[in-house]
Image (cartoon, rainbow, N blue to C red):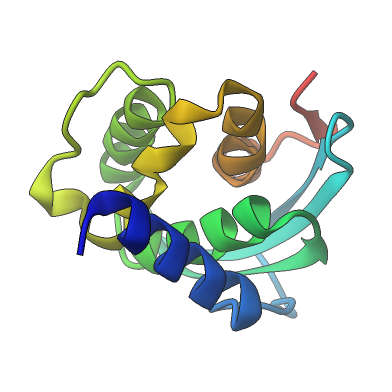
Amino acid sequence: MDLKDLYREVVLDHNRSPRNFGRLEPADAEAQGHNPLCGDRLHLTLRLQDERLSDLRFEGQGCAISVASASLMSEAVKGRSRAEIAQLYDEVHAMLTGRLSHPPAHLGKLAALAGVAEFPVRVKCASLCWHTLNAALERANAPVSTE
């Protein structure tokens, strides 16, 4: 199976059956995200235990890439420290924008999003969840926009 087939398969699976979909009540932090270009909307709630992200959920609607990316991100960041999440964000962003020619193996399923680099207009769809997560971790109250 080549990367394009994997990309399609993983994106379709996570779009049809998003992991960690819903809302945490109570939550330690939350943030709203919006991609006006595509109409993607995301609401993220999370719980922190010391410097670790112990749990998170997302709600919203959007294109397949946006929903799949949020689902994949939610699986990848659970249990990680803020520093680990920041490093993961940097690697994923480099992959989405084509600055990483080959995704590192430790990205796991997130590597399936490497195909987004071929469609620059979709980078905002795939990165919305990451920007929204950063806002929630920083406890910023302003909504996040990809514009």
